[in-house]
Structure formats: structure tokens, C-alpha cells
Image: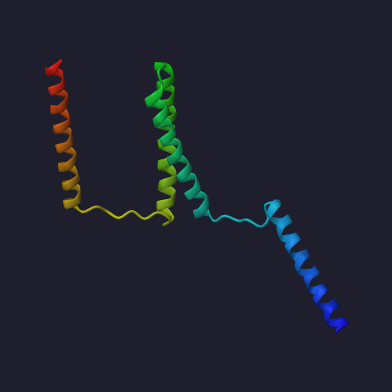
Length: 129
């Protein structure tokens, strides 16, 4: 029985030692590895979030020069996002389903209809003033 207790104790010590090594490896960056797809997806998500934030900054900027600067940066972010997207698509990490001509036509009609009704609304407001 004493031997069993010692063996169990040694087993627990070995497990504890392995866990410590794993934790130390993770702290030094050895335990976490990202695939190319993971890195590209993170980069794509970051550029989308940055574009969204810049959009808000542009809309809320009261200084014209600051607004133009943000718009320049936003253009750069759009370019980076497109490059990341292209690489992901080439590697097969991001598959896009092509829209049918009917779907495209429906969206165009919907968009054109909303533009026309929006335009009429603003004309109505101008007439009221």
C-alpha cells in the first residue's frame, strides 16, 4: 500500500511537472500556433473593424482636413482588406457564392426604388420650406 501511495504521488508530480512545462511553453509562445487561414481571417476581421470605426470618425469629424485625412486612411484600409480577401480566395479559405442574374436584378430594383422614394421625400421637404 505504501508503494501504491508513492507511485500515485510520483504520477501526480509528473503530471504537475508536465502542466508547468505546458504553461511555460504557452507563455513563451511555443504552445500556440496559428494556421495561415487563422492569421488571414484575423487580419480580415481587423480591417473590417477598422473600416467601420473610420467610417464613424468620418461621419462625426467637424474639421474638414481631419475628415479628408480619415477618408485617405479609409481608402488605404479598403485596399488592404481587398488584398487580404484576394489571398484568402486564392488559397480557398474564403469561397464566395456567385449571385444569380435574377438576384442581382431584384437588388437593383429594390435599390432604385429606395433611391426614387428617398429623392421624392427630400423634394417634398424642400417644397415645404
